[in-house]
Image 1 (tube, helix red, strand yellow):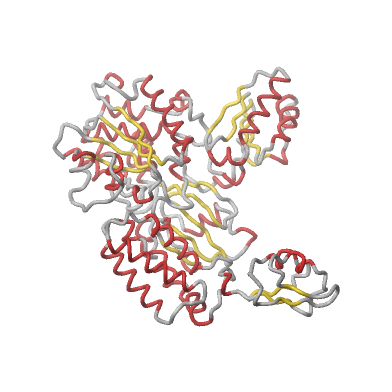
Image 2 (cartoon, rainbow, N blue to C red):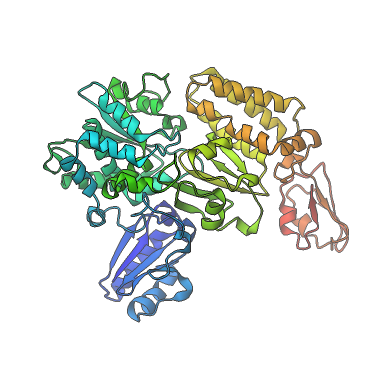
Length: 584
């Protein structure tokens, strides 16, 4: 028998450490010699803390486990052999229903293996692909297999992986480098973090194969400092791989040398752009430069360099074990394989999912994500992070592939999906994302540095009721100028949230500008709170809880709100038992 506890960042934040300590304590008290192992996130973040009890009858998964539940689980399930059905969400016979339509390639080991034990990885075909590549294949045939698979970069642009590898291989130079971009900075995105926490060896193996294909002997993983658990598990994995000769000199007796080091980034969003990332690796301020030359010709200290993100590298071992054609069998004609998405926002089942390319947004959000919280109406989904766009309800049946998503005005990005419901103000949402990109601009080029600031100033005015009739036209002119004139992808895509919200939710902009109203009732300066006389019972609760003293009235008589004093905090709405506060 074995106990396995989800110990990714989401599990730890939900209380997995306390649950683990409680299991260890009670097992010791009862003299039960049972292995308590940790694992990464299986993707069902909304169920955390998750505990698997593995016995002769299979795997039994308990959800939302608290320390107070531990003794009951040990007593009834482990000692008496009676699983507690009311707390179980998955078994070997009836696995998670959320996994039904998923295809797990990148996430196949996440939530299953102990990421801190290389033996768990090798028992699940780990490093077999590397052994096959370095001892049975030539660099040219490796690149051909990646080409056959149709794997495109999962970091955002979707550039063909084989082409980048081939360009680096053909570049002249005795020193070449492989870089893993783990600088995941999109609000609401946590795909790369979860893979590094749950299956770090897959990334190391994919990088080593890439190094062999392009004749590189050195690799870097550029990971932001906000991911301490991912960095710690990477350090453990790298040392274990060196000890087993999967990294270092003469890998597996093949004569191929390759090693990896970790570079911790300071959290600048712009360092997700490859030339800014290289500058940071070199010890310089992370600022993009013009291309060409591309990194494949002149990258790290002027040497040929290939950069892919975490998810791209994590696909590589599976491709060489199962074949490029098997990978290409998933997805669409131009977007092959699977894609990992982080579901966040107003969605019931928030977490990680991995689906074949071509599945529709509706199937992902409703079929796997469980729909909208509190069964509210779906309004939009933000894809591609702060540089992406908002896709409305009318386009819910859009297939998830690079070309289809681009046609909506959004981008695939690294895989964040922020779901919004009817209570989301799309103008304020565009302002939120533009505020992020404005602050994260490196400031090198005028269009991005000043243009995004001017746009943000306009949006700031609109959400407080000071919008002007010409603002929409001005915003669109600025969007076009910034998109066409910016040096790197950050500036070129920064206007996307504004462009797509104007395109699909223009009526909300007009309501803010012309009517001075927020249809979603979220922009406080545009709201008016009044008391409905017909239903007010004069209980005085609203007056007691009003921090501004704006509500007056006698007991059991209709109260009034002084609009001059009202600070629009919403406390009155929260405490009113008869729902007599009208918000307009």
